Image 1 (tube, one colour):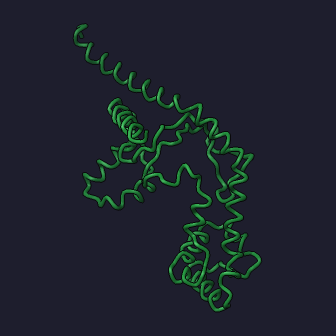
Image 2 (cartoon, rainbow, N blue to C red):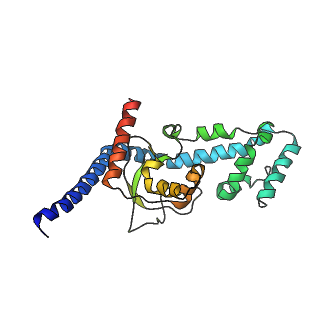
Image 3 (cartoon, rainbow, N blue to C red):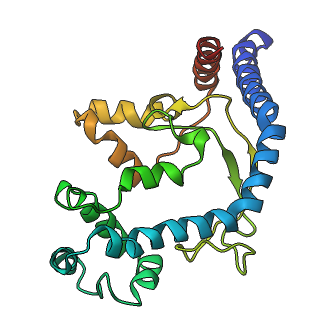
Amino acid sequence: MTENETVPDELGQLKKEIGKLRLQAGLRKALSAELAKQKKISEEATKQAEESARILEGLSKNLSRYVSPQVYKKLFDKKLKAIRPEWEGLDSENAKNQLKANGALRKPFVELMDKAEFQNLGFPDVASTRVAITDPEYLDLPLASGGMTVGRISKDQPILENVITPHPTYNTQIGGEYIGGFEVPIPRQLLAPDFYAQRRALGTDPKDDPRSFQLAKPSQEATPEWVDRLSEYIENAKQLRD
C-alpha cells in the first residue's frame, strides 16, 4: 500500500478521534456543575425518599377525610382487589407498608385513584402530587428526551452491596460514576437514531416508539456524524433558550 493510499484511512481515523474529543469536551464542560448537582442529589436522596413516602402515606391516610362514606372506600377496595388480590384495604394498618414495598400494587392503586369516578368523589389529586414530588428542573422536559445526566457503569462493581442510601422500592443499585451531561435535553430520535431508523424501516407505528424504546434499551455508536448532529442541535437549542 502506497503512502497516498493510506491518507484516506488516516483522515477517517483522525475524524473519528476529533469527534470523540469534541464529545468529551462537551461532557467535561458540564461535569463540574453536574458533580455539584449530584452531590446535592445524594445529600437529599434520603430526604426525597422520605418525602415521597410521606406524600404516598398522605394519599392513603387522607382518604378517610376526603371520602367519608364507607361505601366509597369499599368500592375502591373492591375494584383494587379485583386487580391485586393482596390489597388489604384503605383502612388496614398495613396499607402504607404494602404500598411502599409493592410496586406492582402501587401502580394500579394510583391509576384507580386517578380515574374520574374517584376524583369526582373527592379522592386526592394524583397529578398535583406528582408535580409536588418532581424536581422542578425536570417538570417541563419534552417527552422522550434525555442526556441531562451521563454516567459510566462500573465494570468492577456493577451491582452495589450495602449502599449508604438504599432505594425505598428497588432492591438493586448499579455502581458507576457521573461524567457530565448535555446542556439541554436531547430528543431520543437524535440520541438513538439507529433505533428509530430501524423502526421506520419495519413500518412500525411512531406512537409506540416510547414504549418500545423502554423495552429495547437500545445502544448507539457515537460516530463523528452523531456528534455533529448533537452539537448542532445543542447550539440551536441554546440560542433559542437564550
